[in-house]
Length: 377
Image (cartoon, rainbow, N blue to C red):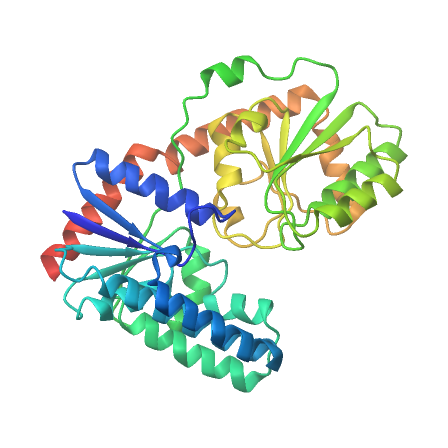
């Protein structure tokens, strides 16, 4: 089988989507398939220059205009990129976003079936509105646009039941779907042996440092812990992003320089997570975050806010933070300074992860889905 993977995200983007499609390509090649990845960086030179000019013309007109440009530019760029490969015999398009999926399907003359991995946290429209504030008229227009894109894609891989529920109103009625949680394939034995043995508790957090990932909450929890006389901890913030400078200033203002370390973006962030005692996920919304799956894979106990698809990723009563303010959240975190509670959390989550995040099983399910799509085409 010859699979075309399409995405608007280039390979160096700081996103779990990039991690997903690179690992997908490796997994498919191990199954004997041929894989080609096309992303926005493959856009033909002339069209890229045209889009650069159009961007300068449209950006001064406000957020809605910038959103229009982005949708048009990515869609047309992917169309012309895939069009340049139309003479290759592809059996399946596996898109990582609706724009590249719809564009590829049309560029290959509607002859190659498309499957979409649904990485969006709520729906692509709600994410667009959150990035580019706009009035309801524009929001309805973008909803119509995404219904058009989805109309060309009949096969969907959701990474959580939550993702399907939040986007269902935009999808065609006759879709074929499967839910396959994100998984990782880590040989972590050496890293588990080297886990922290100090009396100082190490808490880790992985993510793009921005408002949605909400690392500010973890800084505030650290401040509350210290106010209560709990000082035997260090927090590793692993990642980079637009809020890093602001959060570094907050850490300095609160006098937490000894407790909170900014580790920057890491190639294999799980190596640091494996050396920590507790992983805390603070995102305000996430579908099926790789950071939690990697923490489970290296057997670091996880605490997380109950948002988006996260409640599907942890066993009942083992890991979800239910506090509704800073004090109650700090109370919950403080419990896990006791090693016996961390061990109990680790055991429950390990059993759950074995059932739900089994990498070989997920690859087998996806390949079976591919064959069903081909047979139906």
